[in-house]
Length: 280
Ligand SMILES: [Zn+2]
Image (cartoon, rainbow, N blue to C red; front, top):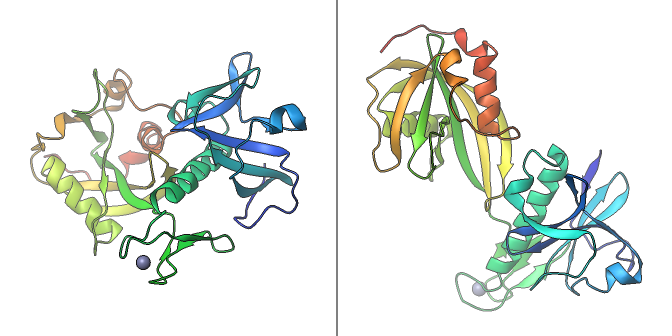
């Protein structure tokens, strides 16, 4: 599958294509047996339900993709709205990424209709993918909020925490938003220090994942423990501890398709056992 990004005006007036249609944070899918697919809409019956205002997203294997928001449920046989989050790991990774991109573009348009400085209505700049304030000339691009997510390893064990916002016994790696003026590496050190009371070193980039809930870019790292006793930040966490691989397998951990799970799988594959060996 090859997706080519393009925010410019669609090549022709024909709106036949793959449609990423959102009703709030729910996306329209066609349900085939147990699997959900982004619908291909064509023909008068399908196209009549589409809203007048839409964005051209680009093409997938040469086929046009559009996104739009709707105000209510649509009457399209065989389709239903599902929460975007529920499609994670169920549709292809690249298809999920395009759906996330579509959602973020709609969210950006909804939240930038007026200039944040002078309050006047903004105007779309279709060739730039920005909204422009005609008075201040400020260009508003989609907001992307970076956050780090970190697998800290220590002598063959991984640091996992149970956060207050999660029900049950769900454990995951630590994460937090980047602050102004901060590098990713500084953010990793600060987050781990604030949430777990320990120091880390040997911070290595792992991979990144757009996380459209609503507009985060998760940047994954691995790091080695150096010193300090585990002291958790009690407003956010209930419990944090070092876990051996066999113990991790007994926990409730993030689902497939998330970078958190990939970091934990990286550890379980024995990749986290190299590096320094320090016991707290
Ligand atoms: Zn303005």
